[in-house]
Image 1 (cartoon, rainbow, N blue to C red):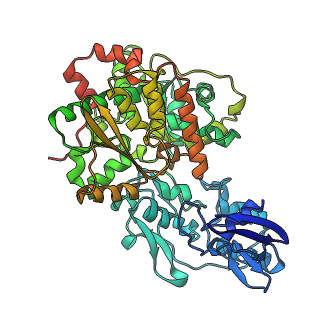
Image 2 (cartoon, rainbow, N blue to C red):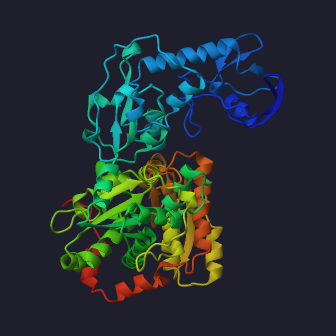
Image 3 (cartoon, rainbow, N blue to C red):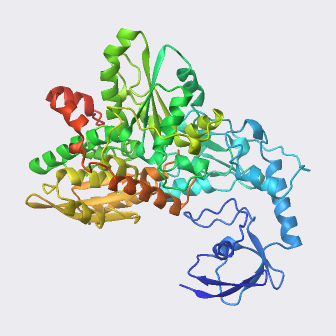
Length: 566
């Protein structure tokens, strides 16, 4: 890695392995404006906002410049300031500036920079033809009139997800970002991961908003509103209220929901304990009967959708277990079925999730009740619940702590770590290993089950055989792993796949976070696991009691699903 000294606005700044001049400038405490630069993606260099001027007066984009010893640059000359203001004005001219009613208002990067650079008027007009507003997807909404052609969505869909659903079309003045042939999102093979919305700096791609239906349900006296909160939400929701990434805000969020009018609040880790037990049992049964291997985890709905669309031959390899969200919903519906008849209210079930694909999962026909209604009525992302708390005027960080309600508010440490990459596999391993001592847990802590590498491989001894596991996050990486398996270059018994980088802590429904933020959120989940009263799913007394009283046939009907289409 290159090392040396640069001069930024006359100040000496050392660099040591930074990927570009932009990173060195930020290291010096100067925040350069960017639109198309995202550190987890390839360099595009199209927006030209991060330009710098060298000692000879040459202007270059700092995101695509390599640091070199002795390089002297300026970041804020008169030419550069005029240049940036002109770019912003041109962007605003071709942008639908209905800012007050935009989903991204207050968190729009274009809006922020326009204020920062004092753009109070726009001198140019715009006669471009833009694509139609598209809300056909269950996960995201596209408004092409707000697109600034930064290309972040194109690159994240192609590079991190490997789907290439959206791309640039046409040339020059008529260039647009859209699905092929101008299709609507629902007409494509989009897997609803929503990562395009998480990197979009404007309101061109946003999460499908269901705040209105949620408020209507909460305010309806004929509805009993019951909420479940996913593990990854608790270590990210506080970021919108000034807390550090990874800080556990679950009990404060429970208090906020009660103040907003929610009747009961539960923890999805309770459902995750059911999933661990069922998935671990299924895996042990596959080991006994010899397959089919590898067994893929089933918690990520975007991963399931990908196999349905692109590799249906692997559907039989997916665990038949429902996701924690749907397992919890199944138990919940059974509990309230009789109570709904007695008090005349209907139970309205809301799931707060870090993931936009959960909106798609909740609408799947496999997860509908006998009367045709969904087991989960509504999925709200972390971003949406943040907006609802803010609408209520509630200061989250000033609230008293209130634990989730019992009996469904009790979850194990295994259930908590479902929110990060490797967590599901580790929970299953904890269940399957015959040795339940603390020393085994300590060994797992330092195993390849944990970490941030895109593909991790581990070997665990279960009974009299070595079990080969793989953990992969980022769907493009999962596709590469599939090719290795198909080519016979790799063999695994169990593969955990998370579509989003970092797992659920990096879901598109979470507040925008860079790689370090996601790592901090994951560490927050491991901290909760460390202090949990029990670390293994089978030690959850409520879960154990429910399973003990349940007949085998009913248990399978309640907790399992088949994605294979006959």
